[in-house]
Length: 462
Image 1 (cartoon, one colour):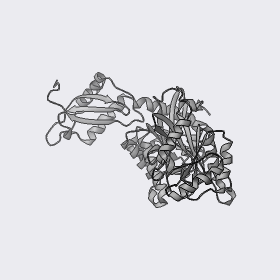
Image 2 (tube, rainbow, N blue to C red):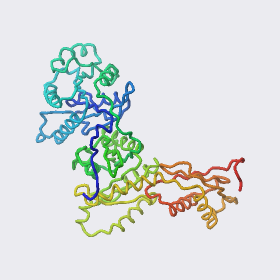
Image 3 (cartoon, rainbow, N blue to C red):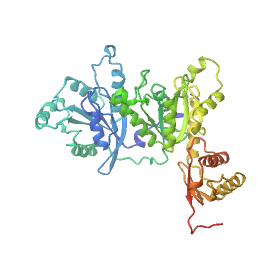
Image 4 (tube, one colour):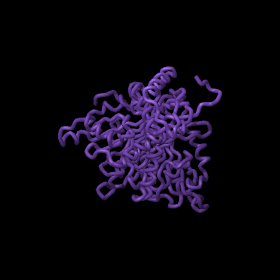
């Protein structure tokens, strides 16, 4: 591997305490996760095994901040040979989350009562030597709640907290107990300066493989089956003393509603991941090229005013098919997304790590460009020279005039052009002005926002 990546060492010291929600499949772990964090982040579906990967979110209660981890159900008896393809992988994910957690929430089903699998899961959890809080979910009815106390006490973790994740009953008392059992807060470094990257793209293009290659561990399940990653998953790693948060997302299908509720919510989550990232890594299959869906995703990234890097994965397979000139391929890609010609393109192989080292320097460069600020005097000199050399065409017999320009914001850069009449500026002239800014200043990978405002009467008319 030809760059310096490191999975975040001592991660527990750099992030809040971690609480993992574990248990056998379909006991309501994701519903409880959503209730604790206060928003619908995990997919809730009445189908066992919906949550396949670890899902992280931040929870605040009684002025204490901690991470909550939703996990796939632990089923010790699942047999991959009998059709449970992801059983062993999801069990490893859940056990890994439990091992790294400071506190475990062991969820059982108050309506079904004690299940043999609950006892087997309890045996696994005892080996972690972590504090364990037993929670009997689905305790809406008085009958289920009453029987749960005696029945689940046999597990050996004390009396359960009776909750209803769907209705919110009992979750306040549960949060009180969680905060009591958390380890003391450490004086870790602040998270300021952390950059969020959303890994987006169609299903089965290698998004999870890229994440795993970057952080150097199996944080998400990798599979050849399209749509394996259903939830957005945050992972943190460091590179050259910089702290980066990677958001792996579900692959977005063209019509997700046609693939059922799970795929639909996963697609929505991918779009939400774009909204909360700083830079989006649009991953496509180098063997296939950009598709209409890829172009739509690129358009969404720019509408959200995020940085954009286009990543061609599986470059090792593409090279086996013949000699390709990357420069020519980049030109082809930019022709397919003319609205994103400023986005850098790189080709790599997450599987072999070939050219993986090209990615993070590109990310760091785009991040720098997101915060680039142009001195006002220099900005106005360039705009003035450009408009004198190429005046705006007249619209309805009226001339469009720019009096001065300012850059009041970065991340992404915002430019405000104070003019005589914003209605006179044509889209072609807006593109001309944006191109002038890009020619003189490095804004590779960054969308520019150009606003045109009428000059106020009290402003200088010089």
